[in-house]
Amino acid sequence: MINGNAGITKSFNAVLFFFGFYLWILSIVEEDPEKSHPSHWDKIGEWSPAIGIGLSFLCFLILIVWGSWIVKQFWNRLLVDLIPVREINFDEALALILIIGILSI
Image 1 (cartoon, rainbow, N blue to C red):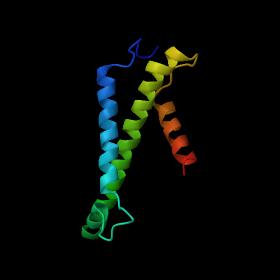
Image 2: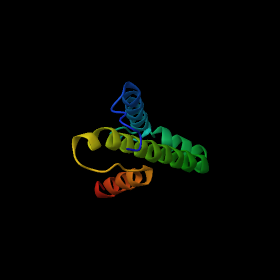
Image 3: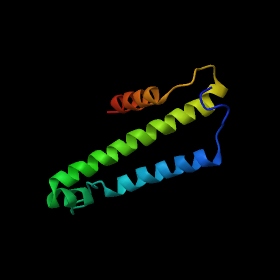
Image 4: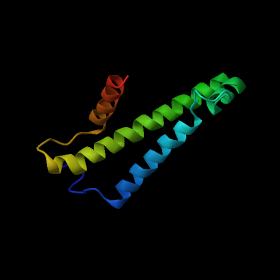
């Protein structure tokens, strides 16, 4: 095993909670189609398009890296013990995130 037999711990659950919180914060700043006023991203884009694009890319990068880490930890801590599968590394977890993202479009 890569991480030994760590299992699902309180710290892992805390990281998962903060990841969900991060996703919730991102959903707040997105535009609501029923509202007629611009979203926070629109306001940033009007003020400085370069900063808006940079912040969007940074949020996307954080989401992908953090999500990949969570998928890797979940897989290696739980699925390996439940079903006969091998452990995965960060690159494989990233590939899983990207494939799921592509298939969900």
